[in-house]
Length: 402
Image (cartoon, rainbow, N blue to C red; front, side, top):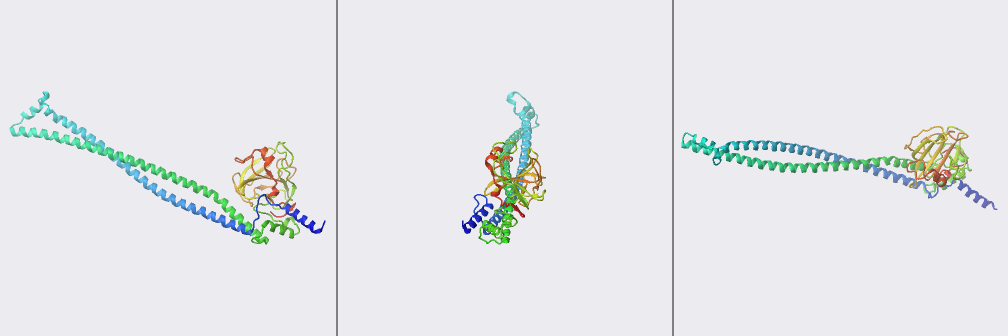
């Protein structure tokens, strides 16, 4: 076999040691810079939308205040009308009572002589005519007053009904505006909740740009090819290998592989197959800090049945979730639902649970049996959904950087 062919085979073998995650297309510094611009634009759009929402809420609050004032005035008008209707009814009752007394003088046909007594008690013909006229005028006046008051009551009732309808319409409009304000508030809260993720994407992309520029990669050069070139030119030193490709980092600053990934294995009493569902990592520092392999959200922190301290993190990877698991830790430095970056310490390496010595057991999977919405049971997780962490993270046999 020629030396040239041996060199080609060696080169291919070395590339396989730093194999990138499945289905990741080549990326360059320019791609990362475009991501920075894209995420910065998205972040500004979110800020602009929040500002617009805040302006709309301010206008809605102003309208609600005006409507509340109108409702108050309308209620006062209704109350005033009710008082006026009550007063008019009392006046009608009074006028009717007066009319009854006056009518006593007109009930001659019924055999009553009150009217005759009143009339014939007059001292003269003129007085008699005057008395008859007074009785007639008083009766006519009272009847007119009762008619006018009755008409006024009807008008007041009609106006009250119109005001009641106006009040209901105003209250309905007020409720609609309050609902609209609440919806805008929910939208604003949702936007704000997503902003830390966008900010972290900007930060991560900027870090990638800075790192690859410092490494000496060309603007349009494939960073994977650049990382291989730097590794190859350095003579294959693990410490000189690229710590992160496309956002994945080693979980400890320096260390070595103790045991590799073989797939489905016996774990926590599950005997569906034998093997190893992750990789075991050791270090000369037996309590070295442990970090996430990428930014994400802590989905669980717990003690497994054997007593191992375990942290699980959910990552958004190419539009899908993947999960990383860190077991046998000495302690917890994070809590469930906490957002973490690759620089956040999640604890320290330890030997808790079923362990023969301090090390970190790292798993990567496409679903999670421990989290709500994780998408699988323990059995399907172990049999079908774990992945070799080395498919995502560049693991030389030893390394001295992340």
